[in-house]
Length: 358
Image (tube, rainbow, N blue to C red; front, top):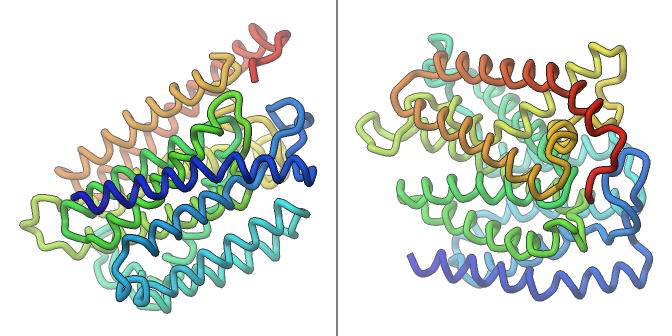
């Protein structure tokens, strides 16, 4: 147990100590994120804090993970490196969406084909078990890309992405530890520490942002970890006390918030006759911010909702099959969306004349 604690603390201290140095360097080089337009913050704030998150994560991995495990998982380091450098390039000068997508597809292919982290079965969903390998690989690649970009989209206010990521990784880390998957549990401890050190400086008022460098890498790691959870849980014997019969329902619950917000915003934009890729201020965190007025309160409200809904789905996933869990999850998401749609107008009319605290 102590190795997980040491790995987490190593990453946390590395991130905590190096983050101010990066922020100072970025300010001197005028590599800043400017507020205004669709940005919520005011003024110039250093971005690219994801550089230190990645450095702290990899440093802790190299310090505490057995050499043979690092060698076996070198494919993962290669895939993360692709996402990392594409994020840096995008933060420095916007990268065309098509180029980013191609890089993400290549990184996902490395994880799925080289790393052999692939959905081999639907585990009884819709009465289907074994599926063709090509279909399993395609679904896995699609899942990684969707979650990676969905997580990137929730990085819109101080502290939100970091807090949601830590919560998701904590659940996955505890579960991997309980089922004896030490390598995955250690990996979760390292990324939790790296994000934890960053969160201190990203809490309102943030002195540095993740940038795409961080949000894409963290989202990518979250997507691959959730995929590992789905496949590992699905392959556990039926009598295991830690097996969830709702294999996909519980796996999707971990990444519920970014997926829900992404699907919701895409449908909303299309309903309004806009491009689903057009940036705006209709995300979940924008809506909640209109009501509670501060970033810190917004993060607490969204985190509480995420824990309640995702936690309920995970608990129910221990007793019910996927079709029940997925149906219930969809109904909950629709209900939440209807409540948001009903109240957003009232919130904007009540608070629209004032500026939110940033």
